Image (tube, rainbow, N blue to C red; front, side, top):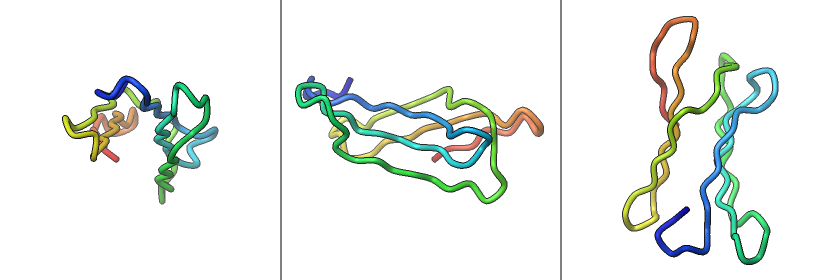
Length: 75
């Protein structure tokens, strides 16, 4: 939940490693406000395990760990 109490940040990976998607969801309106899609050049199937929002709600960071290399990636 964002600091205004009206929006929520959701993150997911698309099926078969197509992309990572971060969605800003308007809770009261029950609709997406913004959808940010990160197309992965190498495709990944790992789940996003971290979502962080800046205090002023301007920036969102999503992170996941690649199981093949044990490296952490952020979007």
